[in-house]
Length: 565
Ligand SMILES: Cc1cc2nc3c(=O)[nH]c(=O)nc-3n(C[C@H](O)[C@H](O)[C@H](O)COP(=O)(O)OP(=O)(O)OC[C@H]3O[C@@H](n4cnc5c(N)ncnc54)[C@H](O)[C@@H]3O)c2cc1C
Image (cartoon, rainbow, N blue to C red; front, side):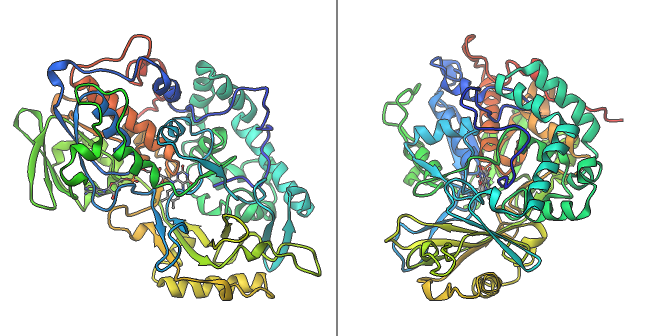
């Protein structure tokens, strides 16, 4: 997601501290915690070598396993699909292997500072991502109701788009204290963040994104709401987010999750893959040169977990797809939590009933993408008549919604993301094969660029995904509906297990859908670190007093509680 329109406060002011994904729900400095020379915690030497099962080899599971290994524990990772999960980078059959497509996450905001810690650790490079109207994007076409506008900057768009931009700024300012929160986040002013957010959570938990717009004087015009939904904010419009809780949208805009995006050179899946192989310099108990790969027979994670139940003495017993049964004192569960309802046979006793309710009520967005490889970035050819690019990053209300042009230099093959969609727009593709999807997409784009023969540049078969149809995901990412705040709070705070009945401890939920900022890899990292803290605490460990962990300061910054009655 990214904003096509400027928000109320100018972001790129070098004089001010940067915005980071620091709250607003749980304003804890995960980035400082990770950077601290004292490390993130220790367990008693008597526990060294103890096994902890980590279910899911996506970013959250790999980060959790990596940190648990560094503490001297023995993570046993189970992965049903492939290491990386929703950081999934694929190639095109028969094409140069350097041509890749990001089927899940593809652009990362610099405000994801805990994520950035691991990107740096893995030695990966990033570069600006060609979002609509971004600096790195040569041109953008906005095509609505059959009318196209070519723009290099927002100034090139008709006045109505700027009016919509102004309405959105006003609406955020008036309805959500935008500048105030912006300042508080930059300054990491925890009491102020909590004060503003507590009020808004109470006021707005029952409100949809669309309702929030409608309630604003600034968005009285239906036409403005429509344009805003279709292209005004977001990479294919945010109208697919209209039914979601406005709190979800505020989290994104406050923390600039939608801004200044960068892609990972060579593909995002390299991040978990490199962490899997990485031999940490500082490691307790294990000999130097130990990696997660080295701790797993054959260098591979164990297969899918099929059953989870509790056994005597507080054991979490895991059965896997090979039929192997093993019992652990602690388990970290990082897959989408709907897996616990169907693909994995679970004991009711795994979680308190209120947590089960929260898991059942979790709401996921659907999302589809389709990419094709092309012979060269032909879109940069100038039209001899207009002097414009032949084709541009495209936002439209047609079936494709968002089209991204991804090149690696003028003389090399390139990739087009013909379409990236969410929710209903994603469901429209679900029953279609990759080739059927491509045909419809080429037709839509043909209407926008009648003189451009995209097909003649295609050098390989398309690759596509609909995350809602992936058996080990069942959806792209969580998006709370109105009234879901309490459920989210239960899941996020699950790592504070001293508050749970004794017979409900030992399994720790983590991952994107437990986080406050699902759909952003930062949340997968932050919740992994919470779970690591929880496991460390369970094993009798502690953090260095100079570097308190998320559980140590929990009471001071706990997410606001809404009444349950
Ligand atoms: C379409 C899309 C676009 C996105 N765009 C962005 C973006 O631009 N920027 C950004 O920062 N983030 C983005 N995200 C979000 C980002 O991809 C996630 O936050 C992150 O990858 C989630 O990591 P995770 O480990 O929490 O979950 P996952 O990656 O889902 O990992 C969970 C793992 O559990 C495995 N699993 C499932 N069931 C079992 C089982 N029974 N046994 C064992 N293993 C199991 C799965 O195979 C999976 O590998 C996007 C996600 C999607 C889907």
